[in-house]
Amino acid sequence: MEKTLQYEGKAKKIYSISGKPDLYIQEFKDDATAFNGLKKDKISNKGIMNTEITTLIFNHLIANGIPTHFVEKISDNEMIVKKVDIIKVEVVCRNIAAGSLVKKFGFKEGFVLKHPIVEYYLKSDELGDPLFNEEHIYALGLANSEELNFIKSLTLKINELLKKYFAERKIRLVDFKLEFGKDVNGNIILADEISPDTCRFWDSETNEKMDKDRFRFDLGKVEDAYLEIRNRLSK
Image (tube, rainbow, N blue to C red; front, side, top):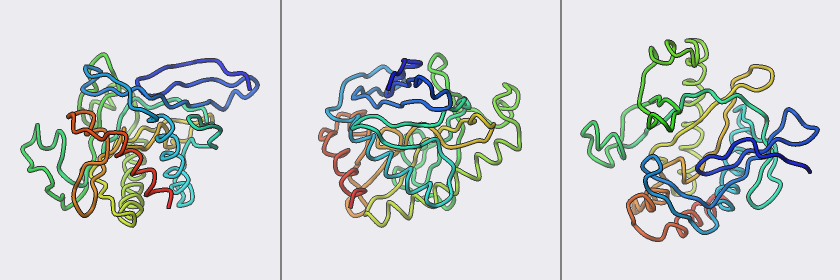
């Protein structure tokens, strides 16, 4: 299978496939970054673990009617995905206060929200992925109101599916980031990945952090946390 690198991000590489214009290969890297790239390192076998975790989660979502770009896992750290034009709006859904809710808004870490909070961030490394609102999105022409309403409703549906999915495996889904794109037919579908890189996972009994926060804040046992998530999802 002949492939050509089209894009390399902080955590993944995207390749086009010769003779298959509607498909890409998404390769997961061991590279880890935090604080908009200010902190960098590698996490051993992260690419392999995130590939498997994302595969398991996307298969679960697809089985429950969520449209995604996932097609199939083809190696330890690669998957075939549908070609999409990424909508430059990162969607964050929060169930429990952590991260910027604590730092910027004064919530107490661990406070359980009565209703999920959905936030939008401009997908721009140059600008530091700033928080913005619907009016900014419309003014920048990134999505119209119908598209954004669909994205929000899909995010909340994904949240309900994943909260139950993780709770059954004794994991609390604290918050997570999603990206969406338009496929070749113009349909909005879930893209990117869902993994400990893009979510906050806490053990439901101990509240031990089981995600990239262990790397961000030098908590140690980073690889162990990713492996534990993979193992619980694999059962």
